[in-house]
Length: 419
Image (cartoon, rainbow, N blue to C red; front, side):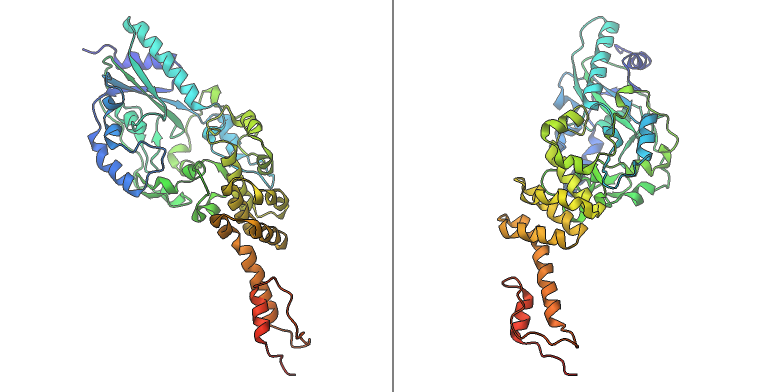
């Protein structure tokens, strides 16, 4: 005998403003153990709980739990879809994942789940002990949602819920009452399709349903420190998140738009001006993005990503905006600026980095800047090692920087060709 039927729960979920609601027991998920062990061996990102026992046993998180309620909110609105496809055409613009276009889903979804608890309490006639999680518990929310019957897992490791595809946010509500559990799970619809695996810019999707999360650009744009070199060019103009595996999926082509006004795009958040990002103070950043799910890492992470994106734009007009970051007090910004200037190229960029290299003391940043002095040395070597056949070469030193390879070649004495 349950305290609340599944049909009634779904009705209350709709009244609470949720797009899908289901329920399952609070029993453990032992089938997840080998998957989580393999995931840990590939490398944790730091965003997830490292304790596998906590991840598979809901009662380790909430001991009083009798049922788990999974909820989904769709976030791809029609204006959001149109905005994502309509690039502004400006030369120095970045790109933001669709999920960050509107209000922060953590706050919105938590409020809806709190409303659902209130409606359930009215239904059963007494207070309900509960705990809410939106990306904040050890539990694997996608697995909870799958067992609760509100959708299925794709090969891209994204969760799909009809009729909104994978463009959904998930939340978990643990309660101390018995709610009728879903009778069956929904099967995957991927079939033999592997478009998402082939489209991933970094090869983070190793196999169907298997991801190296440390290679996912969504994670990489949010990680601390400097972006690893192998992923910088692959970032393109992304400054927050990545939607490639979702846009490439046929199941997402004809999905219904989200009815949630909270997730409507606001202003030009979807294609921000990269140069403007570099000029932001933390206060200005929070004024623009503080209400979204893209603000939690702060302005310096955005500026680091904007520097990488400007490098990938390869537009010399960005050089003067990047150069001041060669002397920033944050080392990851200095390193990112040096890489961006190398990517853009040209003598103006090289000279700026060479000057910064002479003053830089941090080995990691010096390594990022070293290309500028290496190129100068290589240029001097080429100039002295390949003299003109028609111009008498001077016998004195080349005048290069002290220690230049070119000066060494000339000191060794390059024979002048005879005519």
